[in-house]
Length: 485
Image (cartoon, rainbow, N blue to C red):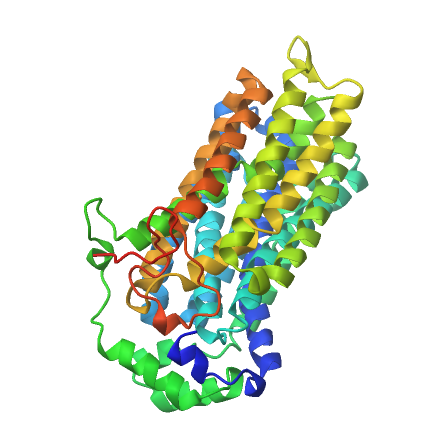
């Protein structure tokens, strides 16, 4: 254990207060999950309303992800300049604007624009929440509190899919009129105004993180926040923050560069875990599940219901991940998850390889459909208890203080670009054969486990001030830290 971690006195840390702050910050994750998944129930109605063609329909689904990359890229710098809570308030405003604009869109093109704006908010939330939670949390609680971001994301997915199901059921179909002469699919987007307003109102009440206050020269306020929310040896913790602040100059993008391959090794590790989190194909389940299960013989209503059930599985397994992440550590949890995902995705690929094709329709007959459905939920379970929460925890804690927000922004931007690539290419891969798509995702799941084994060292229990440039880079799986320069 590091000297600073040893100086922290767990028994005196006021957990209730800091947990409350983390929950409020993680509401951005709820909107993240809601806004990225709400289009699931609307894809068929959008197709029938605007007749956009396969490419533009895929673009409408994936456009939020491009906006997310932009939001993630700029959020760190904005938060460093103006503070974490003010950035959250702006993010909430963008969520609300996107919800309204998407609901009143009159063509596929302006829908794409509104989805990009919502994506900017998603990207911002993906950076600000883990950074803020990491900075306010005691080391002993940081894993569980950081995992609240992922729990909020899966809750947001659940709320989106459940509201999609209920609205489509009430209207008799997503493209049918509901209240006020407005189609159900448009109401699906309008529901997002409610959590966006709640998030913005609560973010206004959040205190600034102690680290940002120290950077701003407000040491007394930072001390008060540490005593109120973190506890332990506050003077020592404050001195450590002050030391790191005084020894670092203003962060620029060039600070992320170094070594033979452009970025510092630690930045490449962050990019890699972000990309692997998406390349296993998790969001195919949540963006295309209605279309996917409809294509193999389920009705629209049943397909939406399957999505709701899957999202419940995601919630349960995320709670499991939160419960164990500080006990068994990030690295071991990721390797366990990679193993489960590889097996489940391989099973899905095998089941779809035996699918019966009738013209443009594909069906899984007999036991194959049951096995594919079970495998899909095993995949979600394996992801939800490991790569879902653990990656967000790692991104909030793995980088040195001097580059944390910028490095987190780069890693999150890479994650959204990877998400866009997977989302945009799935329709093409599915045309080639769903067995090919899921087989490819299975290969990436296997590679993700090998990467963690070879290149990631445990960060559990370490204070943020102790993270050096090579804090989580290992040499050929030896478990020994490698210097970044």
